[in-house]
Length: 246
Image (cartoon, rainbow, N blue to C red; front, side, top):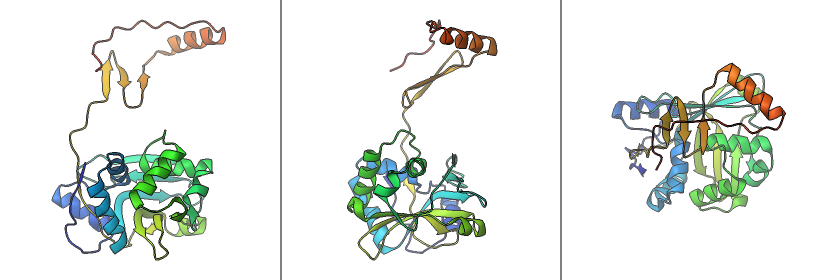
């Protein structure tokens, strides 16, 4: 993945940036892209983002739509993009952070679930998440903070954008309470052709990346399998694999 230079130094809202990059027919950077850039150890791109964090907010295309009545929310990556398919993730509870430090947030199951949704990685470990944000920011774990709105504030304004920046206290902030009309900097990205990770055979889906196999079954077969499982019997499924996994 390659991060593009700033198109200009103009500050725009998330909505304005999305429209800008849609017009340019380029993907706008999302939290998923930020995660991938660090995963690839793209030091040049990381340094470029750190300059953005210092100069202003880095506005991503990741959006949070909070529920008015409870702490649940929907996280949307590539929001309103015409160049990439938006990814929606339902989150049962996003805790109120005003702010909450990374270590404390990770000690809560709901905090871990929230951060996993921010990077769209259900299997991310606490250690892996910590390394990601430390590598991204160049800051110590104790100086990384998260912000989310209170319940009453969510009722007043449900739609928020996710932004990243260096604060004036030598810290790094991950903002999930940015006003939808908040201004900041942003960038486009270039994504290389994705390696094929999914293969299909007799309507089953073999996902190498997720290490899962999804097999469609009739209700009668499901009941038969459940019956054998209750008796602790082995279940044998014959399969005619039509593709070769590499």
